[in-house]
Image (cartoon, rainbow, N blue to C red; front, side):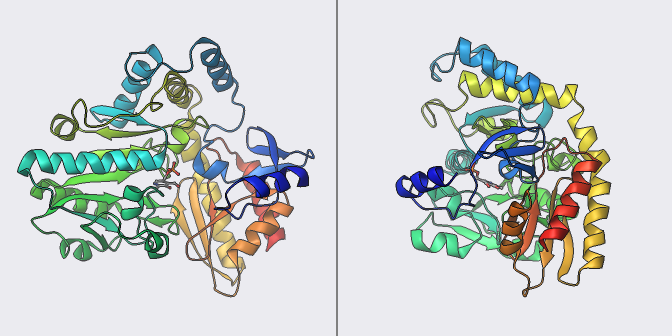
Length: 394
Ligand SMILES: Cc1ncc(COP(=O)(O)O)c(C=O)c1O
């Protein structure tokens, strides 16, 4: 493994402090490194491998697509993209979709939708967007502009103008920021990178109400918490919220890099028109096949049912840790996006490293939080094994 680590360190731009392991293959909830060591994976590539590694149907479909057709460009139609679009608009309840290559690009598209919507309405380029402290929306200039973490934004100023930050679950902090110029609000229904901060259903409903009354576009970023992770396909569906724009990525492709922004009829009819937006790769035939297959497997393998069934078991085990260890302050999260917040004297990053040595893959979130994003197919035994490896790492 050291050989590959050395080559990477020598040649790849160092924007990550990578963990000292070289993974070679995966099966279901397990990863294997170049030396054959087994790791239980409660990270799933940061919430990407929802169906687990090497799902048989997924692998077959991707193989077939690679053999048939990888790419044609968006100048033409393909069956896989048509199917993916139909299934995704149906499951999300949204009207139209634009496919991207990543989450950040989905956010860029959503911001362009908001700007174009306001431009069509008022002909103005003087706008404000409300985002939230501790949010994370990506690393491109637009997505960074709405990311509520100053240390990420500061070296890249000036970013987009007109962005204001409110507090999650504090509706007054939002109301104070709304002006005549507000064109959109962007919020993660659960803040993943920012510490597993769950937006209350009531709060999201109140945002929806303000947006509806003032013709402000409500953009929900479901890139990390969506695609089944909380037991409904998208989290907003639990509260019967009707967003104007939804961003989605990660688990939607189960490993093939995909993303999308979805629009309701209002946003679709009055924003991006031919010539306003485009992408070479976004929604190519391979991406279409991946998305379409993921959606089929969700149905055939009752993925949402498993998330709902297994969640209370995981939550109970994590709550037991809170009771048992005085350095654990609380459990946070919903479904299979969970975190435990530690006291300052216990370093979450150190525990993450120890866990890796003990054959468990997890990560951290802002605020000394250990983060758990397992594949959506986990069972009770996987959870028992995770808890035992985690306790060993404490
Ligand atoms: C909520 C959220 N939005 C956007 C992004 C950016 O997605 P990507 O890394 O695919 O660009 C992430 C990535 O972690 C995310 O968690």
